[in-house]
Image (cartoon, rainbow, N blue to C red):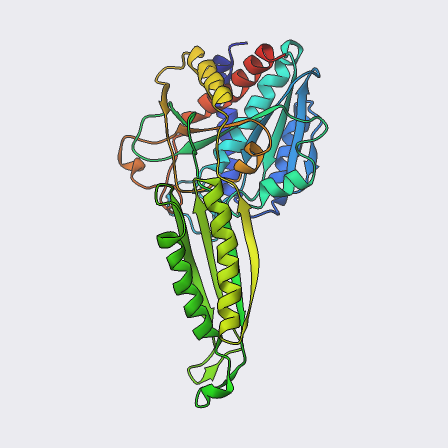
Length: 391
């Protein structure tokens, strides 16, 4: 089967999938409409799909080696200002990262692979995942057995990008860290509340939290190798209810990101030590909750080169490879690629005119639907060729 020609014929159907998810945007783990839609669409194709945690999984093929194809489905908690006739109407959810494309392209890939199932020389496993934006989805599906029965031997995922660039560029990294780790944390400082006029009667959690904040800032400057890329951000600092009350607690929330596994381990360990010891120094206590624990995204070089070769062989008009891309953002596909060989690629889905002015996660962002046949056919073609060549 020529998957690109077939995907072009199915473009209208793929776009319809995309627009369903766009209008019915859902955030986080619980995506009842999205999960039901995927289950129903796969059932229509004669594919036996089932829930996997809050996501969906299914297989097509004939035993043998197994390749996992992953698409995330969730939106962001924000309003949409694209002006599109199919914009999400809620004002509180929006597909401003392009995940609606991922699920649509994988649904069409599943249809084409089912049509060509008799010729598959192995098994393709689908992973329709919620909650990538909150770094909960891959973890949830891992806990519910996405890498079992059958166990995939490798994995592939795509992500669309916006901006002023032509459709067809596929971006990858076959040599180094592609995306940073992310360890989200919440530090709750416990003190002793008192009247603002009698601070000596208190153990001030705000004072303790300020000292923790300052000490954490020194971690990047003094404790990790400056040749590595590391970030520590405190994005939330909250405490108190009135100006004359010293509260019982204060809260810090932040993220640690790194492109280096040893640096990541050091920073997470030291963050916890500093919070606890600083609080003890001032008579309080600190409680740490990890909100996310996602490793750096490091794609398998051999596997990545193999998939790039398959994409070149498709001869899609305008398609061009762009190697060496790296970003300080994070992606929970890394939790899959940390356990089995994995490849993650960006597909350009931008516009060269004024529609390409807004970046992802911006309320005005728009993505080009011409990427739909490219993504769907790339999923299907790469899966078919990998199974044929890795029996």
